[in-house]
Image 1 (cartoon, one colour):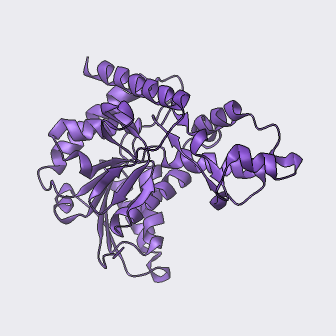
Image 2 (image 1 turned 90 degrees about the vertical axis):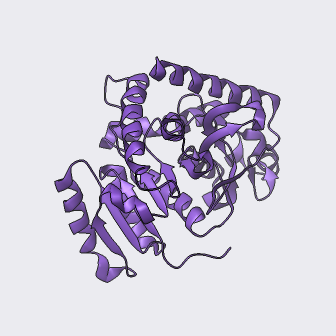
Image 3 (image 1 turned 90 degrees about the horizontal axis):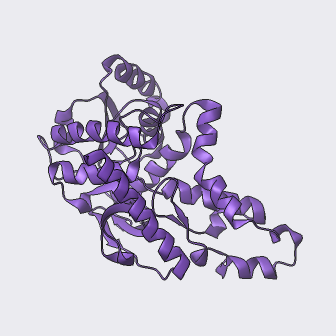
Length: 317
């Protein structure tokens, strides 16, 4: 697909994820300008100063402290603002707090644009993707959540470690909620073009025996908690996932990624934002790809949607 030669990104939130995303995008060569916005102006200024000192090592790019007025001509607005879950806190409390923050940010953005694509990375990402759409009636095809793109990458990595193959040769999806009810689409998982079970049975090695699918999904789902327990926050993985989604948008790739977006009937799910395989382009959500899931996977996906709906009901109460 044809790529643009000039792209402007606004990143809202200069915390761990926002600043690491700016650093990742600065090195990518995809972007001509990054405007970093944060309620803590000194923090934003410090991050921009540090990033600008790297510019003799990168392709030309302008990096600056931004304001919401920078959204006027932005191609992509990346949302990373908002606190992460804290020890002793609950996902429901986080959802309510960050939904209020998201609503206030969206009300600022629409003062300047309704054309920019919006990429939501703040958690709980599915809930906040829906809040971003509904709070100001933004075009739902232009609002994308980072969804389970990182979960799918973790899934592929853990399978690659079990099967002793390059992670790039493992293909599979985590779908549904980015969180406790996420679903591993085992029926769609393959290595070297072969379904996972078939590959493992034909590799003539003890390496692929004894795969505990339930444990692996549990490890994927809880990976973020384990990282937070050890180093306070996760940011390298999610920044790479954001970069990958941004690349698909800015280069109009029509790539299939498990981003979160408002569902309108695929897989029997409607009116909720969640992650399923999706063609992502410069238009945003180009098309939902409705693949054949097993009956049990489809049931779990619908239950994931019900879980998300219950959280939405709570924050609206």
